[in-house]
Length: 329
Image 1 (spheres, helix red, strand yellow):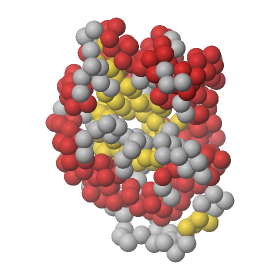
Image 2 (cartoon, helix red, strand yellow):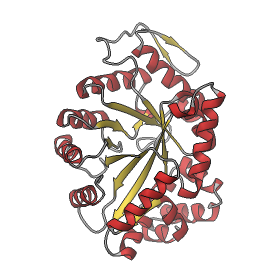
Image 3 (tube, helix red, strand yellow):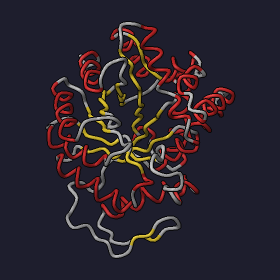
């Protein structure tokens, strides 16, 4: 199992500082460095990390399709790939649409069809095409200014539900499984495998990546509560809410959203049950966290993304402590 260190940009310092942490992750033998996108341009952070490193893969996890036409996404990806010397992994998805509820446009209305075309358009550009005519996206007379280093940048698609997992298996080079409970990972991976086979692809050609929020602290209770408090934010968004309702957490989702609607953040966190915290996050001391990472490897994860979450400390300290404690070897 490859180990990626995720550098969250929410509340983070500027790209130049994040890049120094990417170099530290490389020094500690991580296989990849991933950068997230919230209120930032993930490609500037990825470019800074690429220039600060020499060996590790650099990836976006994830770049939000609602912010970008696929032509722009393709250009940004191949430019960072060139800067990195061919080490870039493009992770895309609908994301949480931080910027506007309607911003994703056709991707919000017809997500499966739109993402299939989104990837097809990018790959057409990388192969040298200058136009694309689809039902969701079009591009007219827009050749790239330089020949890409590689004919195609690996594309990872963020997925949770069965249909999106099948789409990832059918068209992507990898899948980012986010907030999928550990006990449901084999089922999600099964959907990816089925999608690949239905498309006539070898399932082994689709890498299985998983995003794990890590709350590192020697005080187990304090770590658990930090992990619990990190979850309600995602349930504000319809995609996550729909997914967890489908897993049987209807009452919890409704209670969390009601608490958030009245501004009761602490009350929202109290609605998240222990079993969901246990199944979707990693928390506790270093030994406990490492044991949980091993459980994900056994479940079939090939690229594990560690995403540090502060437990009573600053962003900087959380990143540094987690990076050191969970470094490979």
